[in-house]
Length: 187
Image (tube, rainbow, N blue to C red; front, side, top):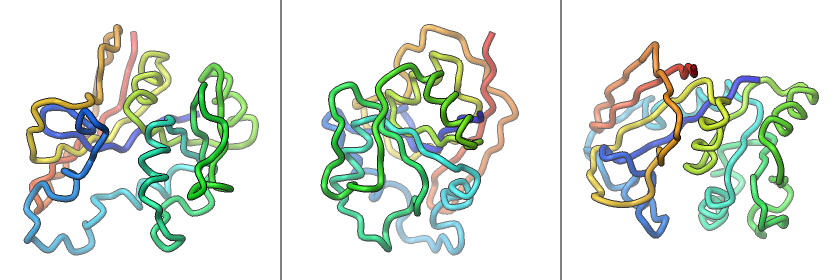
């Protein structure tokens, strides 16, 4: 089963402020340019390639706090699994949209594969790190947001393994965001 990530970081590599706030995602870059049909920077085209989403509890809480309307909900009826060893009940705003998993990632992927799923979108810093450490991440698209936060929650902690990133595809957007897509290879 293919596993990939589509995520944004500050230029200095943070996915959120220390308190988890991501407000800077909506204020960084050139806000005055017309992005035209590139406003989502490829996110909706990416979503068309995946058939399930695996996220961490912290990411779930950020999404839950957005209180998205049905019109704003980007995931349609996609299967969404939240990894958590401490939470097993969905917040009110996500009831009926998510399920929980607590166990080995390889077991989860084997079950998803047996259920016919082919491509998982992996979201959340800790979750992405876990998939990399288990050598399960195949592809990553990282948008560099033109801001230096100085400190925060890093996308990459200390993976403890060396990962080769190849086949770089780069897109520079008019709002000064730069996106790079990589294939991941492990020893």
